[in-house]
Length: 485
Image (tube, rainbow, N blue to C red; front, top):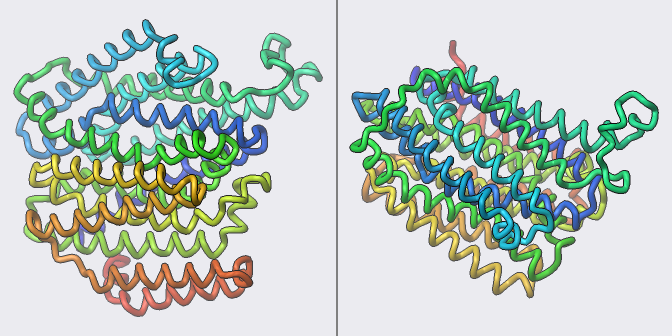
């Protein structure tokens, strides 16, 4: 139990690194939807879709491979230096090639301004070369330093967003508080590009902050270790690209098949699923190094089973709370009513993301047995489901098709991973309790979302309390053990 306590303690610290930035990001969504209409917001969505693809491509699974071989190899310093140098070299090559062909890339991505792509290139460059320094902080058990840098990054991002989108255009210039040289708005209105400016500034300053960590790394590239890293990591890269497809291709299809306005509305409501996303992200920050570092312990599999049960319990609670108070969250986070049209996707997206989180837990079987190619195959299958479902059903169902496609993809990936894991790395998961909590939470969400009950906070609060009470009664013994000092 002491091992689990350590895991949950570190996960809480990492949770701050995930939750606080996402909380600030939620505030920024409200700022963006207030400043820009749905069509302008769609440009922002397109931009970050391409950024996600480039990040997955340029890291080529090296982060996960780094965790695997840092815990496995005796010469850990060589694993660190080889991982960093490999990413640095390939990212510098990307920077040179991309800037040389920036106009062709702009036309391919469909942006009107070359400056959009230049900012994108530099942002991705800085975000990629800090991947290993951040991973090093995690694997050497420095969650507080990791969290501090992540929080500082999002605060810088928020500061410049507020400056560009609210402070300057709201009359401060006209009253003489700031020099006129800052009046760089065309037509006096802020443009979407200032969101991207804020991002590249934050990424650059984060790189500067992490330079001391970089100086600790020896510049030594070991060919044998590099081969192991690439053999392990490249299938992860393909899986990551498939994941980005699952998360983003629906938005691109909606923009093409239905319209940019509908895509912007869908993308904004999709972000209400951020509560589940940030929970999964926080969990992953602590879980990934933990799974590798403790894989040789006698009770490792039992710990993995316990972790998945509690991951599902907490995820089911998050899902129920968001659905029960969805009108409150939407009014606080989305602002303009034109974005409320797609609120019906939120319960589906929350459940889909919870299935993804369970899949990430189950994925330890192929990560610990070095069978990452199977993870690649499962992710590709998920991407195929997403693409086919969206293409066939969007003309018939609109944005609801995209939500159901996401759930279908992640649900099937979760089931396949469990079945295959039983063969290669069996873990004694408590399926009865995990399935029971999941089904109960889905049922209560369905009740809450019914006409007449939605928005009734007395009944919805009761539903949440009933669920929490059932969990406490069922898990009282283990809760007390985990809370003991």
